[in-house]
Image (cartoon, rainbow, N blue to C red; front, side):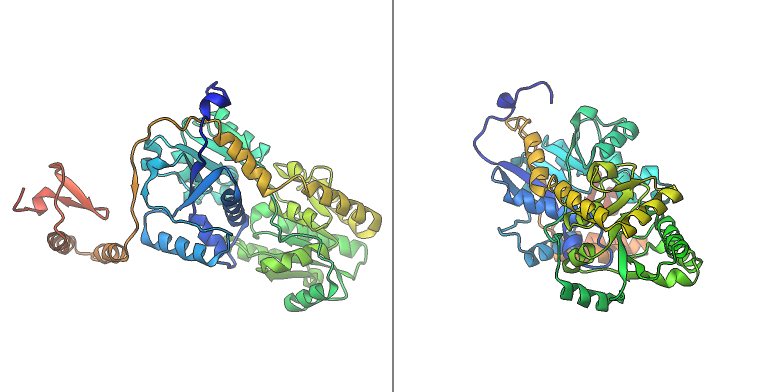
Length: 457
């Protein structure tokens, strides 16, 4: 970066101070049906950043009261092994601002702090059905040639270079994600039996397993159609297909209709919805295989989770998935029926192959760890010169009364009444215009000179 040596750029004994945007962290800690892979990534990166001996990490919880309160409450309920501070004050004392899934505030960028954004994928730009992701497009619009980026795979890095010309390719660093320690070979038969009873999975049947949000990109209609074709052509009665994950609301009717159209054997498709984290290792470990033939992935955690549990994997030969699975699984064209049918046959009939894929998967999974992921980040952090003087940007603690006042003011529909009430509140709180500006704001509400005649002006 910038042609400077590491010695010149990083000449300090103190720790690197990192401010971590934690809005998505709260979404991980509040467990519900909407949790997705990105929440696990945000949580595990944060947890590993806290452990790193060369870093001092604090949490940026945004400036609105709702978000700040949610983040602070969620952090207080988690055990990170160390105290976690929700930051307020002047950000100029930090070296790095790291955002795992939000645009970096303009005020922070202007301070001169080195800013990193993690880009997980460019799905909304590639898949038309995802073009309503306002947060994603706000991130993309905020990126300039001054920004540094962590891409979660070489595929995602190439997509960024191809689709985001405003980004400097030399400032993109590839990091590899990892599976949580919750995923391991779980051989406890009684535990699996109880989990099967809980979710209605027949105890006397073998099962293929898939976990993901149920949406078009995940290619589950193609996956299930070929599963039904496979069991019907081969007269198989001891196999079911178990799907974990929630159905995208926009896709629910289409998916339900597609499953119903598969005939009487559609009863062998068992949808179990949201699964507790502690139950996933057992479900992976006792499955014949994990099937994940997605059309597009920025990284693809489920195949890695499966491999870490010793579960054979059938996955796509496209986008980032070959980077994750390598030669440890069966890779197929996600649009080729015959390729998937052949993979099903191999896994179902060949026990020796399943054992071989299990061992290769366990070995492959060892190449991925959150420690290695954060080590790569720190290596990049160290390339910067933190001795440069930075500008000020104050982050204040959001106050409940301000939050309620703002809600109250914006709830008033009559504009003249809104102005009168706001002016009255300004008088009560002794708030004056500053620097002689014709317009000033309180909590985002513009107050104009013609509506406000202050006696001391």
